[in-house]
Image: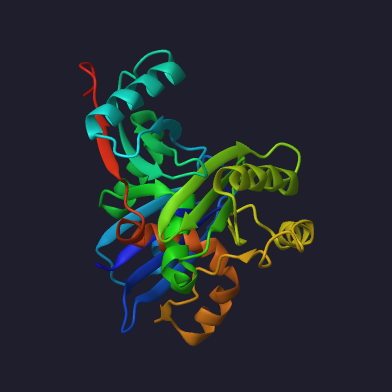
Length: 305
């Protein structure tokens, strides 16, 4: 892979990492953490300065689920792109009551089979009105970023860092500012994906997500946790809530687990405890290799420019 600057755009901070090919796998060449005091603030210049002179040639961004439109609809086991496109268009019309005038592109993921053998298409739709952050990023760094969702980046990071667990059904929970995404991975594929608003508490929201996943998948061995809203206190509460309920204890998703460190040793030790926060960024850099979209569809309108 080409050296990639990958950024997890969280509501309260930007987490940046330069990832390249190492001697045995991925190599971490630089990291940056920039707080966001204002939700409308995007301190990309500060992040660029923190990265410094470390070389990279590709740019990737991972954003939380509240940024784009994410739609889901049932599909057949063997579904043509033409039919998926038609179903996606219908879903967009139902959600917007019309087709967005600016047009949109969509990365569509094939999810399943569930316990009854059914498949679902989960489409991440990028409208131009959602692309403000990507335009700002391109302006600062001078290159068009590849974009994905933070939870998909986390899933790709898990697939890379835990290859020995590929045969297990493992849940990956991204605790965001407003939503909780829950994905079940099995043999490197998406078996289940759902998202739900965080209303009362993270613990109750995750418990509902896990119950739904168990209903659809029948089994989840353990849960790996990531996301900007996952604090030490919330993790401790989650560990207590799920104690003894799964075959393996829940744990943070360590994005640095199998990543060779090319940084200063002092900086590497300082970044190590933040591995679960960097996981979406690291995964976004390698997502096309470990979790590519099944279909990429561009739907433009006559009025789109």
